[in-house]
Length: 268
Image (tube, rainbow, N blue to C red; front, side, top):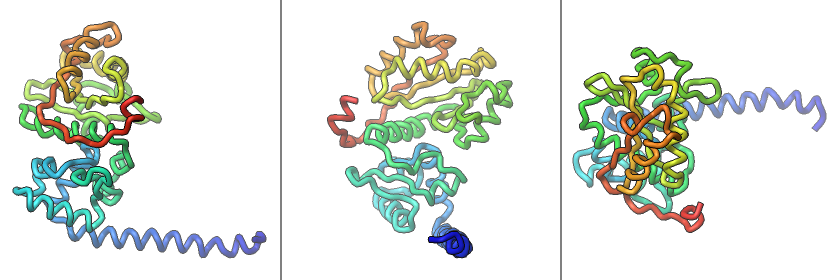
């Protein structure tokens, strides 16, 4: 193609991309009309929780009052393009790009994950469901997490950063009734407890320095063995400036579904 042809085709391509974007936006706006308040709240919460849930978790998250109605609502959200099922584990649903648009960001929730990471996300949902009963307020919105920590005296520059911006997407933030601020991370069983303890301590060391009597780290785990490992490493120098009192594991009671894991993933 010569230069004249390239130049003459540019407006056509530009109009095509603009037209395609408008078409997608119209389709999205029409699908929004299919969402009632309950479905909208469910999808937004699920995006913030990592993007995955089982049928049982969907019911506990308030999508519907019975298992039959939950399945019907999940299927409706699937048909309207807000959810999809995981091929190798059909009782697990994942949000799509349309669902992430409800909160204005991708949050990495719609991207494909390994079975080990899916288990981690499901563990996070179970932790959320249990911790909601605590005398504490859950903060899911990223901007509100930052505002909360700023409001109690932690400057933005002391928060974990990625790419020059505050980054708290991966952890939960809770404010207990006694004023304590807790950041809760979800244990990744494919990483060692030692590595995660050291990483969390490094990421949040400046926050603890700003809020020495108000700040705590929690790690949500799925087994007693992981509890023991985190307690062990929290008492070691790698956890500094945290101690076994300011960095604690929490054993999630609800069992996780068995998601198929390959031999390579188990070894890696």
